[in-house]
Image (cartoon, helix red, strand yellow):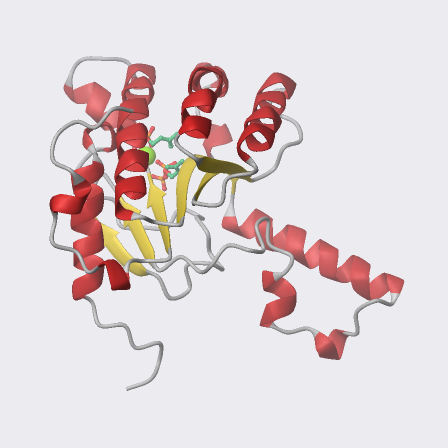
Length: 248
Ligand code: IPE
Ligand code: IPE
Ligand code: MG
C-alpha cells in the first residue's frame, strides 16, 4: 500500500466537513473483465488493488468509518464456481493483507452472517483479522460480507422479540435507538456518503437502516478502475451537497 499517484490531500477538500461514514458498493468487476476478454473471477481479483488504494486514500483523508460491500446475501445466487472463487479469494486476501492493515492502523470489522454456507476457514480468518486489528482507534474498515440490510433488520427484530419475551424490554419503550443498538455494529455512525461504481443506481440491500439520509454518489467507473482519487472526487461532491434532513 505504498503511495502512488496524486495524494488525496492534494484535492481541495474541507477537512472540517468530511463524511463520518462512507459506504461503497464495489460493483462492476464482471463487466471490467468482460471488456478485456477475461473471466469474471479475474475481474474480482483486479478489484483488490482498487480496494487497497481506496483504503489508503481514506487514511490520507482522515476518514473514520469506511464500509465496503464485498458479498451480499443475494450473491449466493451466482454460479457455484464464482461463489467458491469469492470465498477462497476473500480468505486469501485476508491472509495476505491482514498484517498490512494492522501496520496501517486500520481496525477491520466484518458485518453479515457467519454461519453456513460461509466456509469455516474463512470465518476463522475473519475472526483472526478482527482480533489482530481490534486495538486500533483511527479508521474502521467494515467489510460487509454475506450481508443484507433486510437480514440485518430481521436479526434486530429477533433480538428485540427475545428481550420482550424475557421481560427486559417493554414494547412501548421500543424506539429508533432500540433498533440502532441491535445492529451488527451498533457503534457505527449513519452512512452520510454512499458511493456505487459501475453506473448502476440502486442500493442492492446495502446498509438500509444506516443509509436513510445518505448522500448518494454514482459513478460510471468500474470497481477495478476505482482509486483514491475517485474517492476524493466523491467526497468533493458530498461537500457540494446541501443536506437538509427534512428541515428547510
Ligand atoms: C461486484 O462486481 C462484486 C460482487 C458483487 C461480488 P460484479 O461481480 O457484480 O460485477 P458486474 O456487476 O457483473 O459487472
Ligand atoms: C451488490 O452488487 C453487491 C456487492 C457489490 C457485493 P451486485 O452486482 O450483486 O448487485 P445487483 O445484483 O446488480 O443489484
Ligand atoms: Mg454487479
